Amino acid sequence: MKEKNIAGRRTEWTAPYNSFNSWKGLMYKEHYDALAQGKMLPPVEASIDPSYLCNVDCVWCNSKRILHGDLHAKTMTEEHLLRLCGFLIEWGVRGFCFAGGGDSTLNPGLWPAMRLIKKSGRENAIITNGIAVDTYEKQETLASCCRWIGVSLDAGTAETYGKVKQVSPKTFDKVLNNIAAMVKIVKENDLQCDIAVKYLIHPTNAAEISKACALAKELGVAHFHARPAASKNIEGNEQILDFPMDVINKQLEECLAMQTDTFKAFGVRHKFSPDFQLEHGFSRCISAPLCIQCGADGNVYLCNDWRGDKRYCVGAHFPNPEKILDFWGSKQHWDLMNRIKVSECPRCTYGIYAKQIENAVENDGMCVNFP
Ligand code: SF4
Ligand code: SF4
Image (cartoon, rainbow, N blue to C red; front, side):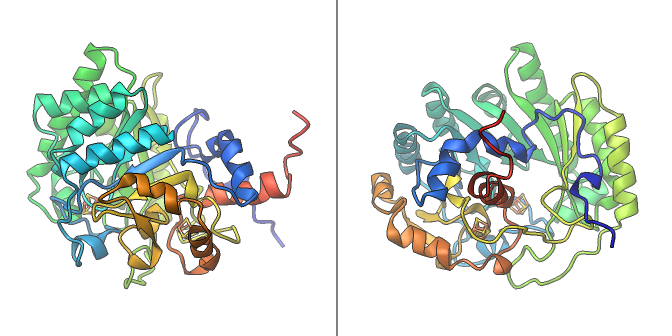
């Protein structure tokens, strides 16, 4: 029988020391050791959802249950967002990612929160659709406060953009202009901020990957980051996505061929099976506490992938973020993790880190004492 060979997968990048390379998990050895011993340290990262609001309606959105459900439009006040960030900074969180469950840029508290984090010496990052980053002040705040910015473009033409995001196609050019403005600020001020054009591959936009990559290169961003939308990632939608793999793989190779010293392309596929279906490959929920998931509704959720789902609520950060210390690493927190059946989870953002804990730490598969 032909052996299943991970190394035989397609080339994802040519520069291995990059932010999308999950082997960076081995740099969290202290956290891995603690988790393997049943202890939780303060998380490396905080994933914060300042508001459950979005200005588009992507066909693949894994936050549909939030954006179209009871939590729709829940928003943190600026006062609470600043208090939460202040607590997380004191606690020792190093990276602050403002991301899903809506678009963070729709909460006016985002900008002062980012400035507070930057001033404290910690790092910000954001994943946004970029539509509302439309003034110099906002563009400058992101460029000067973020270690990286990911703008979800997800199309190579205005027409497809309009279809996959269910908005006016004219929005496409608006986003391109906003990206160009941030690139200009980063370059003029020599800022250490990696701007990435992001592309979530879905059957509906699979034909335009290389076109979007060429646009990204033209815009002058540092990275083009393509990765698949997960099949079965929307609760209540068990649809298996049928990806045209030949069309996709050919374009991802074309993207790699567009690289220069200052422009790198990434076709990230290692979190999925070769045909982009769910592939967990680990036995238990163990890596979630590398990150704390703070929802716009005032709750802390077990992980990014179950944000907004009450079954996976660990505790509340509202109104007192300090109370996080009462439940973080508690028996109740571990019990929730221990009850998780991985086979019932959607794509696990930190699944590769769970694999590393099981294989490299618990089973010493890399013979750690022999460099
Ligand atoms: S931009 Fe993000 S949160 Fe908004 S609809 Fe698209 S995937 Fe969902
Ligand atoms: S997706 Fe499942 S296994 Fe992964 S961190 Fe979340 S609960 Fe744990």
